[in-house]
Image (cartoon, rainbow, N blue to C red; front, side, top):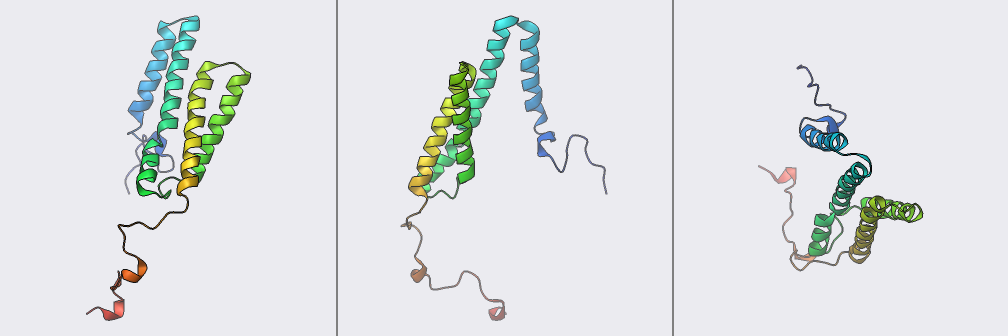
Length: 152
């Protein structure tokens, strides 16, 4: 049995060596901003970085949405992920309205809109229609798996 790598944990993939450069870049960007900028400019720069990352997080399911529209089925888009993106974006958008904060409001309003769009797609495609490309059950003549008793 070999020794476990100090950079890789079997219980937490977020500490793997593959993710280390991304965390190093973000840490370096925040550190450089902290050292090179002062006051409001620093707050604006870090707020812009965090808002950009937040928008990227909310936009990540767009490829799944594209697949749902093409396949006309929601099997590639889990409901709970869509629901909680919608809920999270809505709650933070409401908070940003109450405590006027553009850095919270803009990305979370975008996330709320994308979450709403995902839920609408889910409602449209939750009951898939039979595809023209797949044969119906009655059209299949041969079994997909051969029973073990029929093998030579």
